[in-house]
Length: 196
Image 1 (cartoon, rainbow, N blue to C red):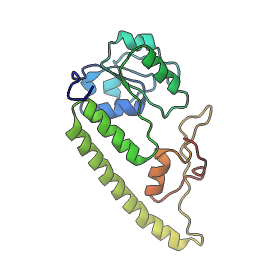
Image 2 (cartoon, rainbow, N blue to C red; image 1 turned 90 degrees about the vertical axis):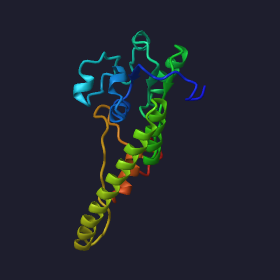
Image 3 (tube, rainbow, N blue to C red; image 1 turned 90 degrees about the horizontal axis):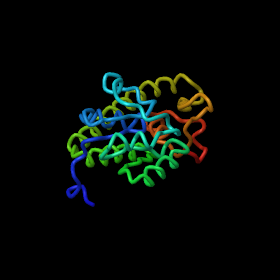
Image 4 (cartoon, rainbow, N blue to C red; image 1 turned 60 degrees about the vertical axis):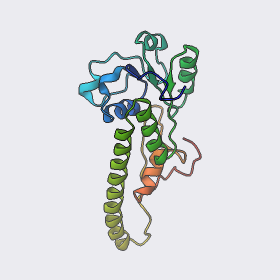
């Protein structure tokens, strides 16, 4: 069914923090009827919403009871594909982004925006993000050039992002965060690992 033929989305359950924040950035927080246990921003939006469980222990029956028109899942969390399979089995309509690059993140924002009838807002959000990243990379590049001139090796700064403490989860090569680090002039020292 095309987006034009589908009824408008009026009830969203988000199963990932990133999707919760995308929905609110698109001005559609009022459509959220439930979120995962880890969605914590914006606090004033998520505080009163029903919780449907943590990453890998989403209560699909509770999700279904909230009668969503759309469930926003994710495939960036290892093991979340099992949640997506359960959404399919329950017949729940979903989108499950799996961004590997920053361009994928931009595409996911516009895909979610299109599904919510907010394409113009999504395009504006992506344009703002591109502008902010370019400004940050430019400022970082100037600071990095000064530091490179003072150092003998001229290497870009190594930055490790830890997503989760136990077990430790950090992004490898196939991650949008590695892409952001590189575009900003840094590098992920474990970015050579061909994993998400």
